Image 1: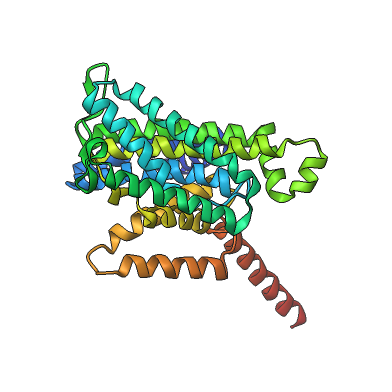
Image 2: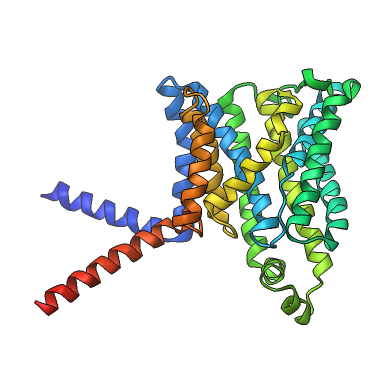
Length: 342
């Protein structure tokens, strides 16, 4: 009896902690820290690599959602920013001996500068015209990386060295996972804080109505270009981390299929939502690996998932709990009505 009372108290305390924002984050952080350790203990070391890959795609989808979901600007060439940063980091660390963290910052800022340069002419473009422009950027980067043999290694690609910080080498999947986890957590927190602030509200105002946003005194050009730069910076961080995760960079790693997967991830997860970006990245990264043994099945499932989400969950997977609660509440109301009539 005493044991049951003690268990109920512990469960109640855990529930109260989980219901607070800080407590929920601490519990999530604990799960993310322990998950790879448990996975390695179960003899599934390769899955830890998959965890790191998910984190990489969380970063880039979050950046893309800032641009598309929060600002309303479509980009289907975001893999190009990842490619630029991946090659930059691999070249700086492998050929010039630049420290990993410095190379990561330089590569990400370089991608942000390219995003800034693409954002300026994109001010005159809207809708499918903007999509075509970003598509052209992604194709151009892919072709350039494939043809510039002396710099990038061409179609054969190039190796990226093991990431190291102050002499500590992240030479195992487990070590690298914690590095990627720390950077992902930092960038997610930064994005949430930015989107809650005045610049974030301005981006959403630009998305909802450019005329109304301009009437309120919001500088449309400033925020549109800034959204491109921030989004490209996130893609650059993801690209550099991807290069040192796989320790290899090639034009095939960042083709147009990757750009379409990123766009699908934010639609499936939920446009204009940080949790939606995370859910979409997890779904679109895990799904192909789960069904990788069946030829072409991952592509079929990706297409079916997009169709199902658009038809039944137009606000993405992030709206699924709300839809379930609404369905349960509706069923209870119908039952109550029937019992009242009886």
